Length: 236
View (cartoon, rainbow, N blue to C red):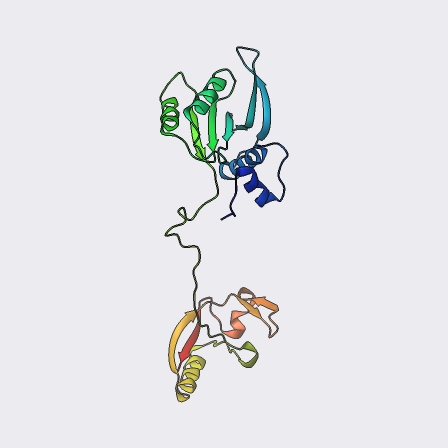
């Protein structure tokens, strides 16, 4: 979580290290970055001017997204300093602009949340065939309440036993006779021995350098059939 802040421009400054000169621009740029990440949008333009389709009105668009043959008018509102939610009037103003522009949908982004009338108005645009859809988005840093009962870290206390390869030696058992002989020797040392199958595909030298693949071995010389090698495991 971020330190205390008065508005979303200060949040932008804490994240990126500088504050834009124009009030509200930091929040707009932060919103653009978030939408770029979560929506994987290809084309996001900041501070766009568009002329109306049916009038000469000039509309200022905080963020314009053109992606997948669909355009999105993003309006950003930060009422953090006056501690008020984004109201229905902001949604209606966005709807009016949408009706006069060649844009498919609208997105109203707030740093403080939305009033109930705003939420209901947004819902109505989704069922009104004559309206362009307006969605709502809350964008702010998390607080203590948001993270209640969430787990952020696991601590695992584990003990591992690892073979010291510098002091060990491994012999490949090429037939059952040598396998049985090795089992008897290990039992004399008081070890519990069990048989298992292990597939060998590649051979290395003592330095770990590749020597050969199993397929290149001449089975007529070494007596190795094309199947799993017998192997053993043991424990005290």
